[in-house]
Image 1 (cartoon, rainbow over the protein chains, first blue to last red):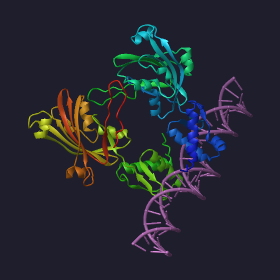
Image 2: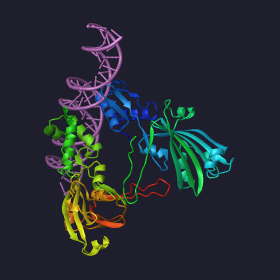
Image 3: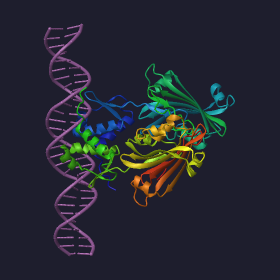
Length: 248
Length: 248
DNA sequence: TGCTGTAACCTGTATATACAACTTGGTGGA
DNA sequence: TCCACCAAGTTGTATATACAGGTTACAGCA
């Protein structure tokens, strides 16, 4: 039952990973040098070296001789034409996922939304607005509308615990999806939510999903262009070729 | 132009990887201990430790405190119902692929072969017999028949450089494949080629491939049951579920 | 002003040493 | 015979030290 003390170098690694996951250390930001860790953490330089070296091979940081150690810049990658749960996608990369709910309200469908969901103007729908974070860095603003009578308990959900995508999949199988991908300049609100630099474009995915023959949800997903990409997967019938690994 | 000397620990790693890839060190066999490397390679124990430690995380060896370091046992895994080039599959795992050509001759189709390829008894076909090695360990005996008029220059190919699968794919797209998987006891010749223990079963894949509406090749692939498995991939329409990671 | 050299700091590698914990085989006593 | 104990060998971790080589900023000189 006694928890044996974890090795010192492992503690250092976990401490740094935590600071990255919490967003305290942002991509490209400087990580304490070996000598700084020697002083602040009371370890030998070789122990600090091992911790940082392993974090390098694990992809958390990058090291440049003569300059220092920096949080690795990651570029998220998703699969074109596959319905993805962003939380799964992020954890599959070994990163931490967190989401923030900005809006979770009932509305009446208007204009574009009503048209996309094939419902009458004024029909009851739920509006969700979330920001998804990968290792503390925002990677997606999810702006989603859901047919109210498809998911009546939508307002009672805690979407920091389960993503809307996972929640909706749990209600009924999502049989068909249509998505459009485009690049666009974000408005000020989106740019702020994604902590994007001025002039940086968004990758926008617009997705409509059908269940039991009904369009049930319509989502606009904004991703920061510098940190996200989609890759395509093409399988000719009977062969095993694919177009993975698209160039950036 | 001057090649700077590689680090000592890197030289050690490459030396050990080479001995594994050459088949000089077989799976589960003992690798020199740190202290033995200190003596034989004239390095400090910490350097030997780093080399062996990194080989562990890279999957080449396994270490057991108090016992020693051993070449990792690998169990090859292929995808069910996907036409695979075994050389690609092996190199994708980071292992080295080598193949040995045991037979490359012209024959006349008889019985089962003629029937499988939908040709008349006595039609000209080529017969290929190869053994594929992963890190020096045999993992597949490929017994293949190819329609002669589909691949007229088949006898001129060097199949140690390009696998029959890759060569045939290069001639024409393989549009359709049918495969049957079964477990069977190998005959003496197969057992010897695969260096299998007595009583160990084979996983046998029997594959027929069509191109341009014609069955062009028929292959029997024998794998040692203890070192090879297939995993299945199932994707319901419109969703993203899969049955990867089948239990052994 | 512009350039050069240098000091300070950084990572990368290598060694010697030390102790802890685990495994195995053998020795010796009950 | 059986069991307890110990010695030897192994990996795992931690430290102190040393030197090589890259980068940056700044002082000082032309």
